[in-house]
Length: 189
Image (cartoon, rainbow, N blue to C red; front, side):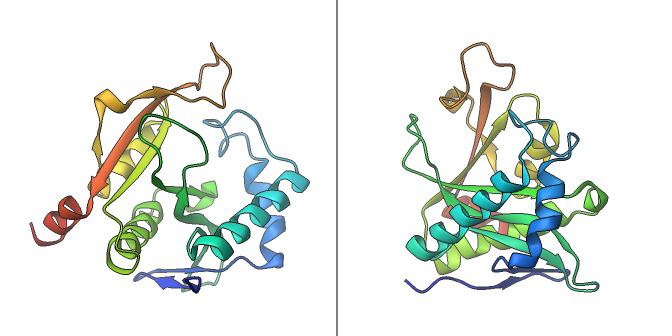
């Protein structure tokens, strides 16, 4: 499958990563406020490696985490997209929707707008049956985005993240899901 290069919403463009995105992406991933629900800050080298993994996912599957920019200014604001879950859990294999934005772009609805656009791609273009999202129990802002885009918490699906050591405060995770049928109902409801 040829990679889906670009998606658009009213205010945002979701596009392939550029090498010029690295400085802003690395700054975002080194920001303690942005990364407070992740186990560690990322170095510039780790951020570059993350971009490389995303590019590899696009090459293999045709979709991934798109770089997100504002249409009005062209400013890089973060990423949003779809990735195959990389670890084994009761709900895998699965495709996850995720996002991360720089703090100066929080509070404007950009995460929900971009996530909604990625969901539309998942169900319309990729014909997926279901998309999941998960985060640490304490990450209420991301859970609000999940709810805003029509996802429903799967209480029985909550899990301990296998890539975090036992006892780590971020290890308990919540699981949200949305099926194609639920998404269509949200559209036409």
